[in-house]
Length: 640
Picture 1 (cartoon, rainbow, N blue to C red):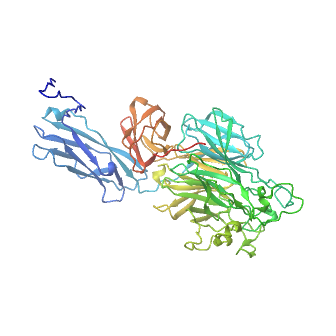
Picture 2 (picture 1 turned 90 degrees about the vertical axis):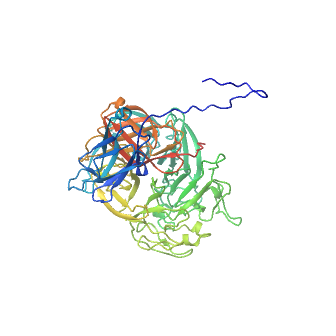
Picture 3 (picture 1 turned 90 degrees about the horizontal axis):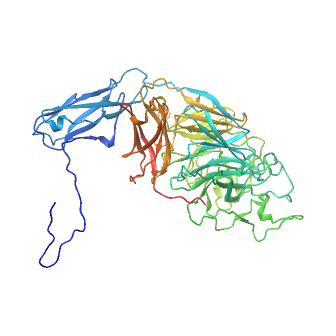
């Protein structure tokens, strides 16, 4: 390139230089909505189009090779010098057979032939087609005990792919598994064992956290702090509930995040936690009463401002304040013999108010004891809730009246901001009168007043998680799984918008645990308090053939990339050199491939649509698609 910059007046200069590469002949494939998906019994099918980018010197014919689970409207297409720039559409349909084959991703192969050598030499891509089976696949899991530990209560997967399990004593065990859920390494964290409020009921990880240096969020309490029954009002009943951060190489540094939360003088306390996609923390806090009225059998203390609710903590605020303090009315008269400030005792919580300035608030109220909650891929929050027990205290029917109550079942609730779910709290009822009134699970919702549960369970149903795997023909994907303590595990099918329960059934084998969560590869993990063990149930899907991707962990992570991910599935082959993964439009870096797991490093993402992205796995010439599986997060989080 020769350029003359000499001029008679001013010399010219180059401010920028753009180099555009010249692209040779190409065949362009365009899929509807970026993917091709068909279902048996659906006569409309799906389609993709094909076009050339330049005029050929001879006819160009593209032949299609198909799997026996699909058909196409044509088996070949031909472009000429006259129609090369006109898209040709190929319609794809599923073969509606009576075979139980499960969902599968198959490929349409393309071969090209032409006397135009530029086109004849091209290698054409395959089109992966997701095929949904309308024949019912039997749901079956194989359960095994993977670890034992004393009284485990709650667990969460860390961004480092390890399982963190908290216990009643304050001990945390961290388990590393191989692809078959055999424990290959265990770390013990005793940071909380020496504190007075060491009963762990919740563990969580911020979705904005990093794989190389995770931070543990732990909710811990002192349950039965005053013996579990009536006690003198002159005895201090502290607000012992707390959310702490454990950090450092050995998680030996404890940093209080939220203090002063209520804890019953029984077995209700600060329970599970979850995060929204902006990094805000939600905390399930149990109630102090059976149904609004203090009673000796459940500890004898009243409801207070933050009891019996799901709280929102705006921890992403740089100046977040989680130090909760209380104040009593100016005319409050303390009882004789008191040796402490009455504002710090839960005994007087029914008239206490929160000192302004904290970044913690009531998000949803009327929840007697939501042990667990989950933020779903649809952006919805669900929580279990324990119903009242006969003989443990009356129900509040107004600010001043009460009646006895019988046993009531446990509930599944869709948690929405400012909704009231029926468990009274007369403290908050002073400003919000609906919270003085008990509503049973049998009463229909009253708009603006009371929200009824989506469904009920036998007592005591506690753990909950979303099942995100494509196992068993995708039957369970998007369902909720819940866990009855020492009893059944439930499979709850939701409506497409997630606002109603369509069906619920018992899962076998049952976890018989307290907490429940899902794991890579469609596994279900049971945290068994009574049995002091951890069980894992892995799917036994007899319909799987070829490379099949089930799920991706985590399902959301910072859009900046750099975190680890695991794709669980079957028949990946184990050849790193012959395996690729795309998340949305991004090709990712892989670090290892085994038969059941693909591990890699998340890339950075530019897609700011807020939509879940597809995950496409290609290994040994076979492709498998997990549609709408991963969400890049474009916010930021504060960990202090």
